[in-house]
Length: 396
Ligand SMILES: *Cc1c(COP(=O)(O)O)cnc(C)c1O
Image 1 (tube, rainbow, N blue to C red):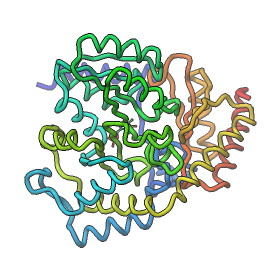
Image 2 (image 1 turned 60 degrees about the vertical axis):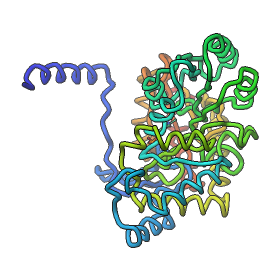
Image 3 (image 1 turned 90 degrees about the vertical axis):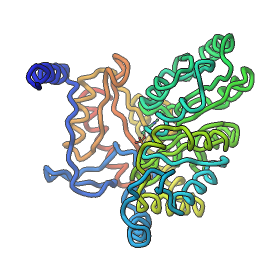
């Protein structure tokens, strides 16, 4: 009988709306790219996609996906270990390992699954997970699915990490420090050099989620292990094909070969969920081939990010320091963040204002995400709109 719960859900939904937390979806009728069309007939510049390298609508990736439809078909109708592994899957796994300088890789349907299935197969109640307080929801879920002891340290706070490592050392057999490479709300990069030092001091493994950092951070976009020059020293890297790497779908875990081998044996989202389709996998291969050939897109992204942040700071905006492609324009006031995003949209700039509970109270902001798909004219138009609206609202 649906009756009672229907009433209950309707009330809950009304509460969400009343609190101003209801998530409505804007409908795009063009491909994902810098200039997008909405179903309202508006054409806007997109500054809120994770399309960091501008690859979401790249002709080489589209062609590779089409080619694989012809050569390898549409779907796999199987998990990997039964009859769902094609040559393409093995090739992509190898290319991801080459990109990160790791030993082996395992693909998942999404990074959410990679994080959800990474802890439970390798750790038990005898072990400890020491996790950054701002880690992604999928890491939190993964930790919950595992019986290991849990320790949490304040975001990027190395003193607190050391305290937690000491505590964990009293009881734990194996320890692992877990962090996002780039935290998506502030755009700050995890202090991997210090994490690495502490990991050595306390005999802990390291896992980094590179979803917002791979393709973006480091001179050639190899992520935080490149930025901090610690390639090969991180035991587990998780990442997504759904952001910088083409924006299709798919996730992966890459790292030490025994760990990857164990995940193939025991990781539940891998064992009990369908294989990635060949079109997606072949586009991934084309993407990593492109990455191996040239750093043109990474260079352009870094140039765009530097240019945008510089101009915004010069205009008087309060910008969070960032080495990523995420630029947090701090407004502090929740309503102001919504008013500003609305006014920017009417100027043709699509950005999102974030406020509590997505970010801490009194820390509302607009998050701008830069892309190699942006041209200088796009950036100038956005900066101009920010200045105009910023003045109207008394922000600058
Ligand atoms: C986006 C994101 C994920 C999830 O990636 P999907 O492949 O979309 O499931 C996981 N971790 C972090 C840090 C992310 O930003």
